[in-house]
Length: 384
Image (tube, rainbow, N blue to C red; front, top):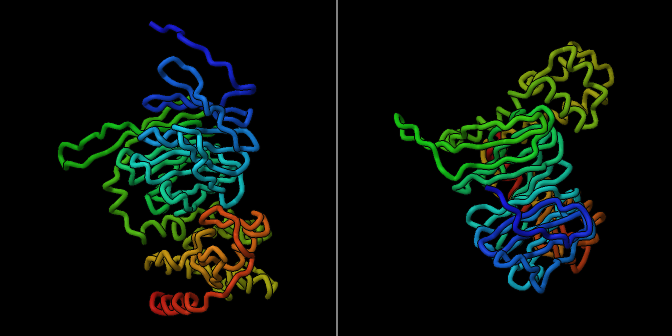
């Protein structure tokens, strides 16, 4: 039996999402607000609606305890609210400034993910409200996210249909095309499935798509944990397809070479083995300047592969780009960043700190020579 018991009509525009806690119902809308209702009698709480977002609110979710509510919006922010009094706890800006489509708490409430329209996904520390890690998918907007029941992994789904598994350090462990017309939702079963013979545990994952299909997946966290960093790197370098290489060329402003590389069937393994002689003799790239640029980009890629395979210390990684810093500087918030990245951030973000989201006292950037020397020493040790 299904019986309608109540209708809520307080929003003035389309309602995008709803979420339950043990005592509350939250809703969010294109009207830029979030509303909270008591499950006792569905009356709106005195401190509702919650107002901060300047554009449509796409998603809202409660922390497992129900004491904190997260909301994300087209304005590029994810906001944390105290559900007891409606107080705003933190405003967390997506590093790219792109509209945020989905947010989700980890099972232990320590982390929060936010996925954006440009494919960036951020893992936030939900206790300090600081950015912990950042990554991105190749294509499409991120529209779905789900944490594994043990909190060690999470999955994102994109509007292009890609399903991606990430670990708690934001390393992409697996990605594949799940739905031809885009993913709309995904979720894990809370109950594990055991392999009777080997004693391994698996979790079931369901993904929904605009192809009219629901797919059920089995994810083995034991197997994923066993994959070494080297294996992960191969997935994104030596195991690149020709299409992946084309995407990389475009990202390096070398899209004019896509046709040449495709004709010569250059995949990831071939890319890493290219030399100045093969660029000139085999690929017939006549321009010396263009050949030099390609070789420089390939060498940067090789360096990144070697560095990652050795495990880059977290303090050497820029909080914005999540890449090894080449020219670290100290901002007025006390954190170190890649110079170009923080300069771009300040120019576009009105001098807010990427780590605290507070206004920077000053735009002055001081070269961190001590950190640069430490990075150089580490490179010399790990790139032999």
